[in-house]
Image (cartoon, rainbow, N blue to C red; front, side, top):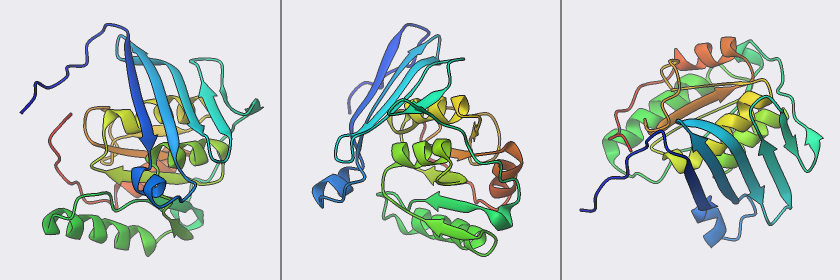
Length: 199
């Protein structure tokens, strides 16, 4: 087993060359290149690019979030019953993990207006930033799946937390982002917490 990478305060590039690998294999167009620059563990640049659809999402702290030059703003949905939410099953087929994910999805489906899944955590976060979705949650992902999206959502006015509703830990292997904190907390209350080994 290789040595674990340690996230330090040094300037660190976090890169995912193909987010949505299964989509890429099947030629489903929702794939992305995700790049973030962290300094003192804070994102200074968030860039997500879908080369198939030519969508470039970009954010820098205090400067807003943009897609192909158009400023992004989240929706203001605060009620779970009005929300369009996106979630993923992920790649794990461990029955215990899969059952926990299914229970969480069932809890959410019974309360939201609609549920979707596209297959790219990075793009899901961009869709929250752009107002196409109201929220997204997923388990079992890695820092490179969410570091850029975290900044893009926050710069568009949204909230990014752990799936328990607490502050985001980029190494925790889970993420919940929403257009409002009220919505994020309502979703978090309906999610089962799944312990993954930290990155």
